[in-house]
Amino acid sequence: MDILWALLTLPYAPVRGLTAMVKVVAREAECQQYDPVTIRRELEELDRAEAAGDITPEERDRGQQRVLDRLTPQGAKSGRSASRANGGDRPPPPARRRPARRRGEQQPGARGRT
Image (cartoon, rainbow, N blue to C red):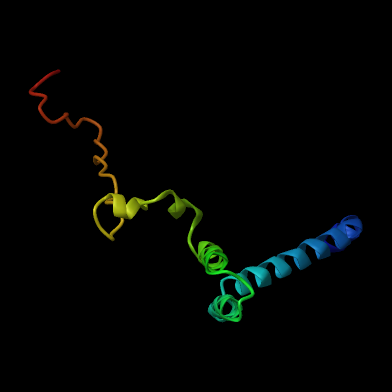
């Protein structure tokens, strides 16, 4: 059966190879984007360019903000995060669920109803 399946899907082999290659390239690009060494190098290049007079301090600040924006999640740009909105650094407590009632069990507060 495996041989038959391999023969039937043989025309799609280039597509599978291409998608595997795209996944590897995307994973490597993401690793480089969040690599601390790369981030430090970009920030140092901005400082060096500003010291040399190639860019203005405002351009350096915008460049630094762009680099730092890459590190923060997209939802955090709206201001306070969900954990801070609850008044602390801890996440919100989980919602409480009532235990499931068993068959024949009465509701709390129900007295002898039949």
